[in-house]
Image 1: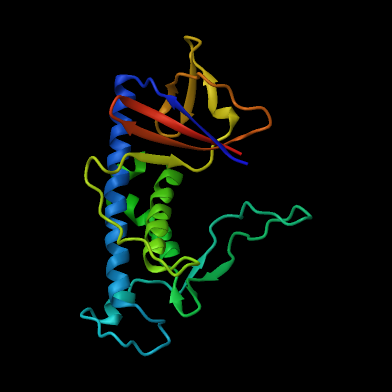
Image 2: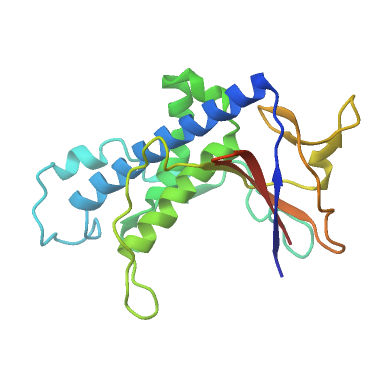
Length: 229
């Protein structure tokens, strides 16, 4: 069972600027990654080991020239087996191709390090928040290209204007992120932003743990939607 509570944030002036900047960076990254997915989808609709029925206006060699066939694990994985051993370890090699198709989500996640090198503003953004942007693109694009159990697909994903991208998400939070500041105010500690005061009008439900938090811009201010599991 899952629960979601929404709390009003009371950020300082400097935090307001930081939060708004992070949201704009996420919006730009979303639009860029969505554009990549459309470009790849239009030119590579068949498996790489099959003869395409649709001729691409972009040479296939150009599309794949910077796509690595494999990736190397840079750190031990978090998932463990029954004995407590990590399922994946640093140095493990994995294929970026599955069933004849390139795993574009994986490619884009790996490319985020290049984004931070080319656009240094992204270094101020939490890595997991940035990864969640790519995951959002994957969800939107999968809903568009992959039919559901009834054979229906969702509409074509849209690029987001300034007022249509309203949130960014921290995929991993826990109770320890709720703290009190020097003024004895309850705050939520957000990576790269700091301790943001909040109106903690509802306590954490008994038996539940904090899982994720989404910072949301609404007409009357900023909120954080916290999911409990």
